[in-house]
Amino acid sequence: MKQILIIGGGAAGLACAVAAAQAGAGVTVLEKRSSAGGNGRYAEGVFGAGSRLQKRNNIDADPDVLFREAMEFSHWKADGRLTRALIDASGPTVDWLADMGVPFTRVLHHMPNQSPEVFHMAYPAPTGARVMEVLKTQCATLKVDIRLNARCLSLTMENGAITGAEAEIDGNRVAFQADGVLIATGGFAGDPDKMRAMIPGCEPEAYMHLKGIRMAGDGLTLAEGAGASIVKDIAIEGCAPVFKGRGEITGLIRREDSLWVNALGRRFCDECICQNFILGQNAVARQPGKMCWAILDSESLRRAYEGLPPMMADPAITENGMTELYTALEKELAAGSIFQGDSLEDLAQAAGIDPQTLTQEVTDYNAACAQGHDGLFAKDRRYLKPIDKAPYYAVRAGMDMITTHGGIAVNERMQVIQPSGQPIPGLYAAGIDISGVDSGDYSVTLSGHAFGFSLAGGRLAAAEMMLNK
Image (cartoon, rainbow, N blue to C red; front, top):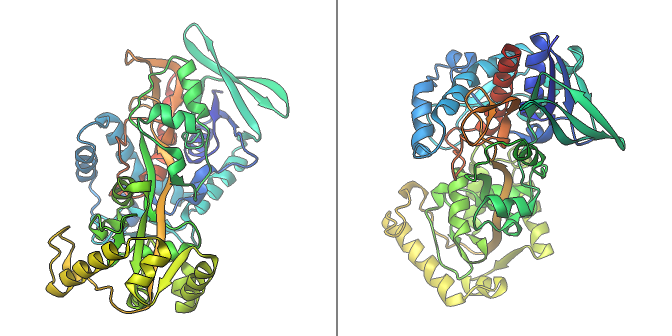
């Protein structure tokens, strides 16, 4: 019986564990935290191309089309063979999960008018929690040995091949032998020093850490110590603008009909980029202090109730109506997190924005709304809504970092490779630890691919490990 060792019990790790165990391997998972699941538990949807659910809904998610889109988005900086392998495996992976009991019911637009729809969601939500629970149940059924509070200290190498690892468990050093070792530790967003070293110009402190578990980059350290090629082409999966407080407010400000200004009171982008959250992050990152103000009026609140975008709609708003939205607003006003004014001048004074600049920017924006043409940023006229009904509100917003993507170089077989391009025998990596998919920016049009490619990559790694000695 082949012995597989997996470092990290998140999406890629548990997908690999289940797939390898189904193929007859003995599997051990070393999970550093007190519970398995990782950031996969928080995923809202799963990318898939060509799943049964898509076909039943007449969604033509052609892998060729999505592959070309992915490669063009990266300007062909992504690894074509790796990207193709993950896209091709994504639809079958959704079907594999469904066969094990994940209740996928919908494939949604993640952004307005997105085509094809690739974002698979389960009901009841959240999707990530449903997926990870099914994988953990399968691990228990298949007798996968999940060791919790197990920190991997080093990889074991003999004659140039990885043959296992040593871990600290309950204060004891424990050695594990394996025919294949998978690194799936979930990025390095929790290590500011690694972020600065791997991402030129990165300022980790500028991000509002609101989501997910901050992983320390253990996999990157382990792979580098084993002689892996480390690629410093990292994508930060994050979003902006986000409000550091109640989620209803972020849903309120990330709308196409919003008006955003920077710390100087100047508008800086077409706010229709709000649903492609990487574009929003890039735009906010260029502003002084890496922040912005969302300027709202009473009509903004009314429109929010009428139609929050589906991926931003907080259940409290859609189910309980305006009461919850106004409750959130009142609480944040009382806390001094949001400012209000009966005039734009009063609002600017309260928020510390230059009154003359803000008033002129809103006046110019309202004129564009009246003309039906935004001569500055060419915003879609459907979303040109004036800010002219008191009271006015200013919401301070910033950037949220979910995780990092990249670092460890792999081939399309999920084998970790050396700088020469040759694989390191016995060593594999999957999930967001790997480079070769996202270059510089996370592709939101491949919606849910951080989760989907982690799951698919884990399965690909399992299949390869079962083939190799």
